Length: 435
Ligand code: UD1
Image 1 (cartoon, rainbow, N blue to C red):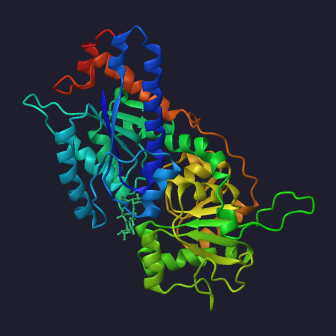
Image 2: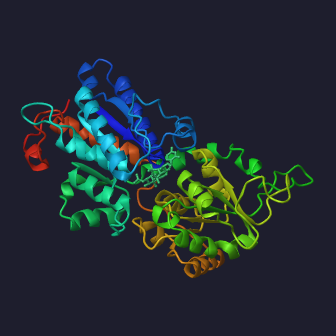
Image 3: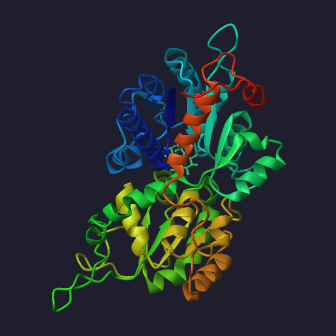
């Protein structure tokens, strides 16, 4: 079976890394099991990794390949930034050429970014022969819904799910949403969360990150040579266009953080979009206290005094280490709501809604809205609560293995590459015995 996987933007990399590892594991197992049974080699998976180039910087893309042990992409589309229409159409044009060249049996797409949706639509309309055969479209992280169609990601989620043939779901709400939209339950599989697979796999390695030292968040070591205590700090990320592109909206969120900033240093690794807006709007964090780059604080080389400290976007391991040790995280990201759930760190989400309700039900996340008052209030509540997070079902580090098992089983039973691609019910009637 030939599988082609697409990555494009920062939140894709940690979702895809465990899938590639599970494919390698599957091939290794087949090699060791198939001594004397050459027919089993037919189950081997050939994998091609395509990077659309939606994110292209070292900080938004490059460093994630080394941190997550991702192989170099086989094909790079070099699309870069642009308006939604320009970015999406560039990806579509270039990805169509890749499909016609590679003719994969399966296209694996993750998450909800423009690259995901663009490649899903192209794959759904491609035709490899006169019978109209095309790859099976697999969506990993299917079914999440914020029910807010003003979010570009919500449009991407809905469109991708509705053209997908196999939908892998991270939480039970996803199954419900897909069923309510009329998507056949036969296509949907609740497998867990591949982003959490990465978290489990790399959480120990993240401890060797030097980020706490670099940001001067370690105190003095004890007399008996004990390890240095971490200075209490909060962590902030904001990048949603609705939060940072409008001066008043962004200013209101920052006002909601002022009280917290008098108690803790707030470390703010800022997305390029956010950095541009901070400059453009000339933002400060209180009278006479402009947002500063880390290291520009008044006390020079000492530990950061309270206030907000901007850094450039961080790599996966550095950010994971910072999340693990934070007292509190404030964010508008989707993935960080999930990661803090597993790490048991109180999270305040600066949004009106979440497409990931399990993170609230599990107890670590609180949806704060986007006004100064509601954010301040949510921070107070999260700080005073005893957070007891529980692990959402199937968030156990094995989601990618489940996905690869299902793909291998279905390929074996139905033969993905038989043209034309057939709906599930027709395929079920044509089952073949597996070797
Ligand atoms: C994208 C995703 C969003 C995801 C986010 C994570 C969509 C619709 N949005 O949003 O779901 O949460 O990534 O980061 O796909 N830029 C750089 N360097 C880069 C990439 C981008 O400087 O490597 C700057 C460019 O100025 C660009 C801006 O960031 O205009 C926005 O990038 P873009 O990919 O359009 O969307 P994101 O806001 O990153």
